[in-house]
Length: 313
View 1 (tube, one colour):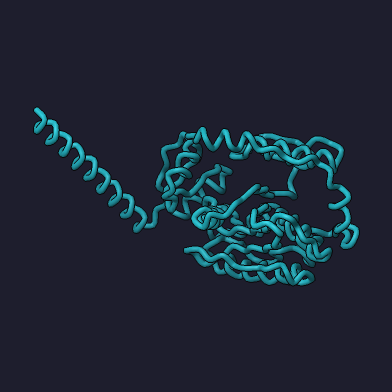
View 2 (view 1 turned 30 degrees about the vertical axis):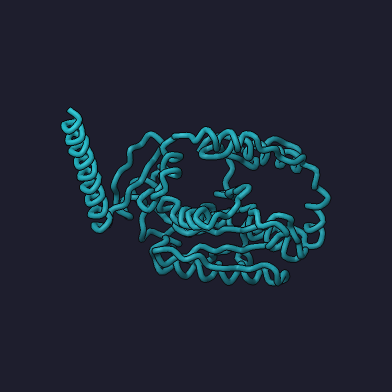
């Protein structure tokens, strides 16, 4: 009986291993054929699509998705499938946020370098004249070079700020500006700079989505650089490529950061800052931490005197 059980167990193990091998072989074959695996929601099992289908059938129709083809981390895949790590949830819930009491400290740099009122003019527009900024196009690569040089110019008044390009498997790099603090803990503000116009070859200057979000980051960085601001926690300004293709740029960066064991305290993303039907600064709760989102809303209210519009994308 014991021998039969062992044989049965071995056969089951062989069957599972064979199924896994076949599944992996099928996965790799689809990738080689040019397909990508995407998810549109936590409950979506996933769909194989081409890069062009991503843009025409999803991005162009405002259907949100994440490209999970290159994600191998079980923890990340579980999160994207709506499965929660209770220990991590408890740890995040225990975080306390400081009082909103730094208005004077925040206003001082603005006093040194007043905010510009021409944020979307060509003098500061990060992507002024590109046909589109599709992540696989020549325009996309050119726009990344232009943005890299512009961010370096903005950061120049403070020599402590470093600006680098983060390379991906495709040609359009992401851009990272770093203001070192006394702590290696990271506070990250971000925006994507790639754009599409309904297809990979269509015109898509992306003034709202998302040159406007990039300009918000660039103006904040300009003010802090001119004021020679020295934070306690290290600050990073991330300009992501490949967002419209399924959050590719940010996914690569955070996989790298997780593998390196970097401590990230908070990430605040800015997207379509030039568009607000409510007439207010808007905050959205899709895939957002409840505590951090509530704190961001408190900060907005403290500085503007009115509660931000909030909803779900």
